[in-house]
Image (tube, rainbow, N blue to C red; front, top):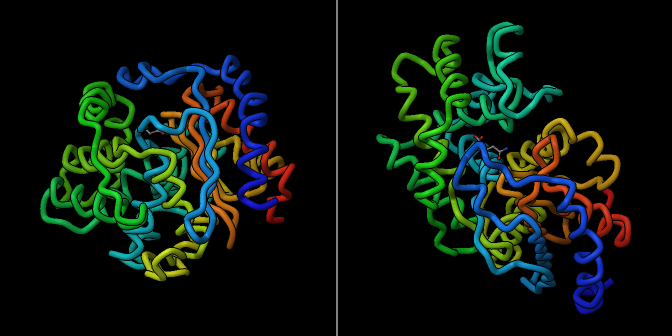
Length: 312
Ligand SMILES: NC(=O)CC[C@H](N)C(=O)O
């Protein structure tokens, strides 16, 4: 199916998936996120020359939330190499909720299981180079913007403040990491949390997110510019984590039904990619019990089936 055919097919798939929004609820544990439109569903698919097919509500900006963790992982790998990153986070899925503390206490030496759960992503935030939280945040945003093809991405300060004011669970995780010495003596817990909340609050549109996904689909090289944004090996690592735990503990089901690397966020966004072909962004703010967009997952499942995207 070429882009014109995809453009023609998308609206009916979006409308068929939209009804699954009623099976989910918009996240409200970060109060500002509760303002999102519950029945919205939008998708953008971008090909190697930047050609696009979009359908549904793709014109509103939403915060990246956990999708940002893929890109902070990539930046931490660039800054510290594999050994530096894997000294602080593991390589295994947890089977627990994204904000769970359980395994931090149960398993020696108290290292987060992977960089895509909250505890792991907080540890990764501590690895980003920069003298101050503001400098680290600026570097992260510059990197996100580069991956988005030069669009200048900004933080939604209302969402940042809302999360920071209510992040009792994430604070607990971070102090636990401090006690476990995953965050070392030189690291201030509140500074790390500030960086983490800011990158979770980075605003994107579907088009920008699809462009970021496209860079991953082409192994770290932006196919529109030929520019190497991330070394191929690091994209390989990120894609492996996306398959294993990008959709939290619905990742196995997603791998079986949809079969492509993806990462979701509690704003209802999902970044997905078809290797060597497409970068994809979906947004549908109503979430299922495991924290993924109900309509968004249904739409990706339909598209993967119809277009034979499964990589396995
Ligand atoms: N699943 C998510 O998107 C979680 C990200 C959110 N900022 C949090 O820490 O709770």
